[in-house]
Each structure stands twice: as structure tokens, then as C-alpha cells.
Image 1 (spheres, rainbow, N blue to C red):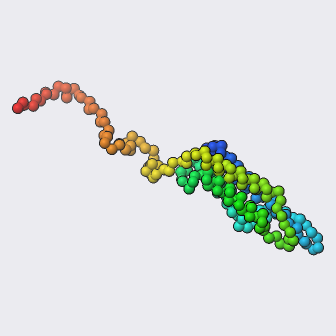
Image 2: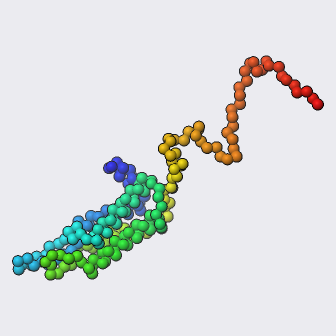
Length: 201
């Protein structure tokens, strides 16, 4: 699997690699402190921090799926798999980054519930997640404006339908053309044979 990942990475262009790095950065930020709460425990106030996985909910799960989805898309493109996405790869990555940014913005006003917390807030890891989503959306825009063509869709007959490589015996002759047959070689007996003349009218 590691060999396939390296081969796919080498096939990507610069903008696609930037998108992969932005998605990786977004994934890493999920392990950083996102939220800080003030918790009263036995009459004492503490200020624990929580990562995205520490208060995992729909919002954090959606952001995780965005990062993984970009990884899957780029891996498929690195392996030259042909499929079409509405608007192209750049548009999909742009929308994914923008959607993740909207989810983070929602979390600014609607933070997850922490047990026994009297107050809560966001911390430095959350801002890095914002930067990662902005970078993801920006690279998606670059890919979209670059207009790199998608790998061609292969039909079943183009792929040979599993019958192996095309040989001279299996090549299809274009309509209206016939393959030129090799001239027959004359033997000595044919040269000595009497020539038959057709009677004139």
C-alpha cells in the first residue's frame, strides 16, 4: 500500500499536492486543542482543553470526512482512474474546504457541551483548523482555474475487456478499408505452365 501511495503522489501535479497537504493539515488539527472549558469539580475550578475527538459530534465528523474525501479523490487521480465529478476536481475541493470552514464558523457560536462546564471557549488549535480549510479552498480554486483535464473514461472495449493486449490479429480494420494481402509467390512450376489465351470474339 505504501508503494501505491508513493506512486500516486508522484503522479500528482503541484496544485494537487498542495491540496493533499492542506487536507493532511486539517486532519492533524483534529488532534490539537480546539476548546477550553471552565469546569467546577469539588469546589475547584479547572480549565481543561479538548480536541475535536474529545467532543466528537456531527460537526467534527463532517470535517473529518472532508479531509478523508480529499485524500481519496487525490489518490484516485494519482492512480489515473477515470471518473467525472460535477464541476471538476477543483470545484469539489473548493466546496469541501468552504463547507469545512462553514462548520468551524458554526462551532464559534454553538460549542459542544462539556460536562460540568460553567463556560467554554475556543483555543489555538481551532484557528489552525480555520487556516487549513482556507488553504484547502484556495488550492481547490487554483486547480479549478488551471483547468487540468480529468483522466479519460475507459470503455470496456477500450480496456480490452480483460482479453490482454491488442495484437495484429485482433486489430479492427476501419470501415471502408481492407487489409492488403501479401502477393503470392510464384514457383518454378507456375512459370513453366503454358499461358492460356482467351479466344477473341
